[in-house]
Length: 87
Image (cartoon, rainbow, N blue to C red):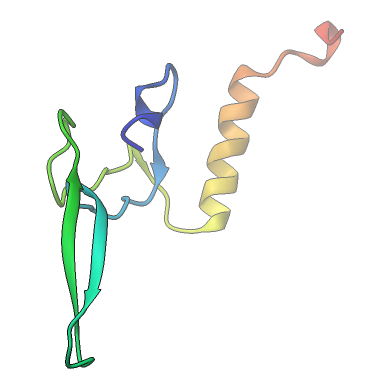
């Protein structure tokens, strides 16, 4: 989402995204007892505007498929060419 939302005309609708950390890779190390696994963050993002554990909130909140479909129909209708001008 970080890169996607930078595109021209891109907007988020629907529900908030999940939140994530600044770490992009994690190494799993099983402990000798076999009863647990140690997770070590290995690579950290640099320069991301969104902070750790921050979700994206949509501009338009939609809670179900019917609401998404209705919103999409309205958006498409707003930019569609009139039937008489179709190629």
